[in-house]
Length: 203
Image (cartoon, rainbow, N blue to C red; front, side, top):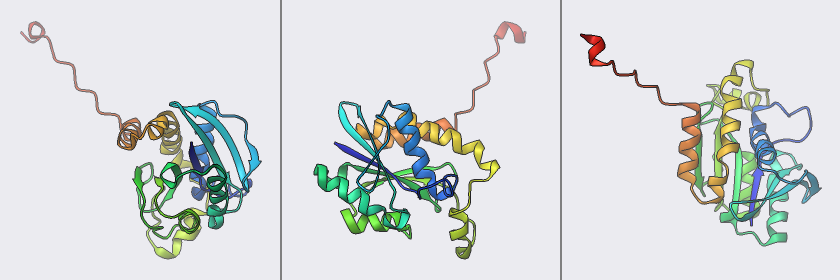
């Protein structure tokens, strides 16, 4: 069984925040892949599906970002889920907007949601880092992540969420590299090569 966690803050006040891109990604994954309706459990909202022959449970902690690990830890203990089968989607200020990086393990890098998860389940889980960009100054980071996405962000945000949801099954299949590449290509399609002219036309 896999546990897929989106990080964010609950309630309409935070729904459009950059900090909530993890919720946005998991919402679209659940919608796209025929998960069950959301229901309350494990101090959060859960939905379930079968993907690539595996049972998958999506979880949005309702404990607020800084305490996300409580909800995830409770679900993992209940189902005896190994941390390597925990996949977490969250915002990353150290990546350019629209960039995606997947890695197993590591530190919190200043992210309070990840810090809470590490405290409750250890560091050895899969992180799907969704780039939201850095505001340029350390003092601006807090308002940056807790403000809504700008209108100009829509150009990359919707395609990113769409691509992440479309290619999500690759993560369940253990193909993290392919997932990352396909999402990148969806947002950066290769330029079409100009058609070769017929030699007869040139003469």
